[in-house]
Amino acid sequence: MPLLIVAFGVALLIFLIVKAKLNTFVSLIITSFVIALVLKIPISQIPTSIETGIGGQLGHLAVIFGFGSMLGRLVSDAGGGFRIARTLIDKFGRRQIQIAVVLASFIVGLALFFEVGLVVLLPIIFVIAREIDLPLIYLGIPMAATLNVTHAFLPPHPAPTAISGIFHANLGHVLLLGVIVAIPTIIVCGPVFNWALHKFYPRVYRKDVDISVLGDFKEFRLAETPHFGISVLTAMMPVILIAIATICSFVLPKENVVNQTIQFIGAPDAAMLLSLLFAVYTMGISRHLNMKQVSQSMVEASKQIAMMLLIIGGGGAFKQVLVDGGISQYISTIFAHTNMSPLLAAWLVAALLRVSLGSATVASLTAAGLVAPLIAQTGANAALMVLAVGAGSVFADHVNDAGFWMIKEYFGLTLKETFLSWTTLTSVLSITGLLSVLGVSLFV
Image 1 (cartoon, rainbow, N blue to C red):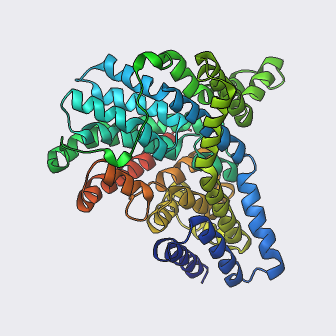
Image 2: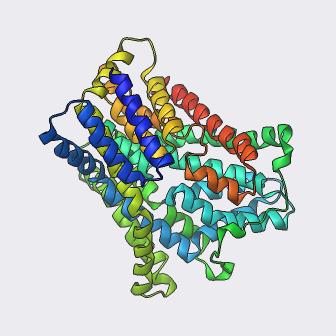
Image 3: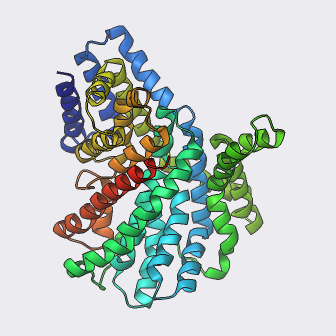
């Protein structure tokens, strides 16, 4: 019966989002109320449960997510993303062009969300592809795969950051292990998948692609953009601070004053604030922009993430209802009495929700709430559980996700071609990510 209730909740959510075309946040809240009633949570406690879910989800995440989006917007508006991509592509040349695209996408992807990263990088990739006479999708595959990997595995992106909070995983550990998992995943889903797709389905590799669907995009002259080094440093500053703090937590005594200072600076909230202030200077003040212009970029970034924050909060509400209604404990008990690895169980639940719901963020948050008790019951590594859920949350991207349609339109693909290329790619990415997580678990 509990599993039927979960299935009913997912079906209701799909109906409201896909068929009724209702806003995702509103759909999540309606579903949360309905499922709470079905689970016989006392009516007087339902609003409290939903408020707890939203508040608990957005508590520290709003700061990290908000500052992260502002930092990414400053780098983008200043032309930092343009400089990073052009410099790497010029350095590596035609023969190693895919490596250049992967590195550029990884650096930019740390600072920007998947959809924003596509919009920032695609015009650059389009120009490069035209200059060296290559099909756009030949460079687009490694770019989109890398952006998707950073979105799924690496803080300060919203899903891995939020799941880390649910699982009480150290964000620095998630970041370090996430980079280890990301490397083989990107290699397989970038250059290797590109080779296989070109061999077995060459028709998608067309050179006459029109990217006017992007609308107006800001063009930069290279001389007007920030230098490469400062652009990379600014984009990666949060990762650098968090990583340093994590490493120092292993090698320095906890009582050491230097270590305590580093831990304070490398705490996610502080790291994001310091990184944002650094970006205000490097991408704004040092380039002779006034604070009004800098603030405008930050305001625009806030507008971009407002709905995403609400959706994350709605996912937290749905998760909390499932927890308070006993569903989470029931599902964890089922898996506890099987021989299935908790990492595989976490991936499987997230993958099923992803295929059903479309949104990777909603799927990962819901899955995290369902499988969280498995960590205490099985002693599974919390950081690896975050990555397993992240891998499952990007499985088989299809028509119920905005990313699917963005890829279709941007690369000029038919519906069939998008299924055979992008849906297949995200499936391979998800499975490769899981295998990488299982591989790391043998040593951690």
